[in-house]
Length: 458
Ligand code: ADP
Ligand code: MG
Image 1 (cartoon, rainbow, N blue to C red):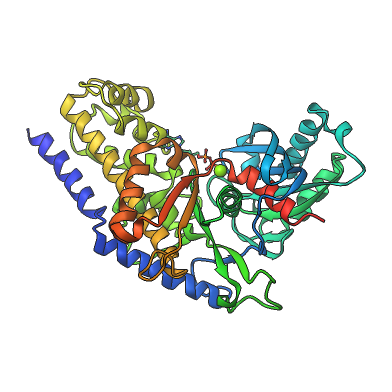
Image 2: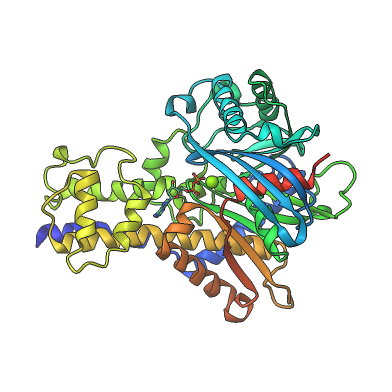
């Protein structure tokens, strides 16, 4: 009983440290809005970069032709080809291929990585026999590169820093489009990179292609980010002539948001300190799929060090970072079996923890739930921050506002999704929430890039 009490205290402290009552979330939303304004005012004005995407036109549905896309920055690298056939027929044809990036290329050098990407594209083009189906027109490609980039036009941008599992020093500060274009040339791929975008911007574009009320794109997958449509006149740091459309898509890079109102625990601090990018991407580290599993692992480790509930720690894998993954958290959280056999299986399979009591397994589910709810609720607060920034779903606004969301965390984790949606209603109020819809928008990072390439085609 003493052991259970010790463990329960750890869980109790976790629950308190992860608490996100509405008042707290409203502070988070307000801080997010404030940081967004600061980031729009001047370059470096905020931890949130508020990157000008140079996408001033989103697809309308009228686009026609064959377009390619590359998607780099997620778990898998993707090559895609679409045939757009105008308003009625829309995406007439879509072919894609997924290739996993060998881990050693994620921390090697830029030339190797881009060469790998270009050769995958070359192979895709050859395999599909696309060479024959084209007229003389040069093919155009949208490049989704889901890392923070400083753009100077729709088709150029220098890498600010890597995030997630990538860390290739010699690419930082370089123009990723030039690197890709060079690598493509070496592989004999004759294509023009027509647009450099972020997966978040792509999700916004793909969402808009299907629903003209989409104003925000959000990624909740390995990482987390958001993009939205801003009024160009509300971007003091935007130089030169305002775009004709009057709009500009902003890639917020909200993953780097940080604020004293965020519920950060000792586990988050340790995770951050041991990460590839300490002190950075704090919001992302509280929210996204890359991290949730490891936060839970750290809580379990603390309990294992204080109690015998998980057996001898040295015989488990509890000290192995990232051994517990977010899909495992999702599976355990959704375990409906009376004896929590899925939890038992996941603990055994991943952590080599065996012979737990039902009570202990219930506690594991509870820990998964606490970490998940905090994540989903913070993501909702971020969305509310953006809605408020653009005067949407606020008193007097009658417009429908749709949030396009992509990413495995949102797509595959029902409890996460339901919590996010419920929290939006809680924060916006029943009435205002009726005009807001959250829509799963798959493959925005692939299709979206092709659509933007089409919208900016020469
Ligand atoms: P990426 O973000 O890498 O482009 P995805 O959008 O497919 O790729 O998201 C993958 C991420 O989604 C994984 O890293 C994982 O954290 C999360 N994920 C995948 N499946 C699940 C699941 N069943 N439950 C919870 N999270 C999941
Ligand atoms: Mg992705």
